[in-house]
Image 1 (cartoon, rainbow, N blue to C red):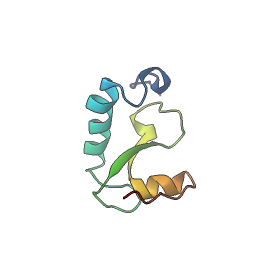
Image 2 (image 1 turned 60 degrees about the horizontal axis):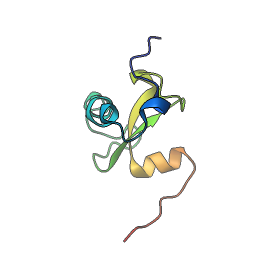
Image 3 (image 1 turned 90 degrees about the vertical axis):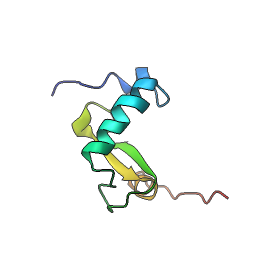
Image 4 (image 1 turned 180 degrees about the horizontal axis):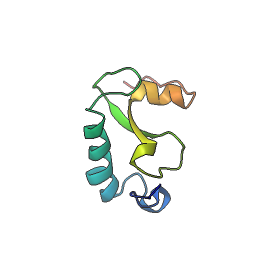
Length: 78
């Protein structure tokens, strides 16, 4: 599978490329909906393999489903 996304480790979460190219592309492809529950609120990008290899490895998840996938509970923040 051809790598279309530069190494995530090199780019980092705060990189301009990630926030302006990759994240909007994945959200648009997934129709701005969580791939697990279908909500359109508080969406994040999840790597199914943990390697952020290419667009097929990335999916949109709401924050609650993203926490569940990683086996964590979301903290309530006031």
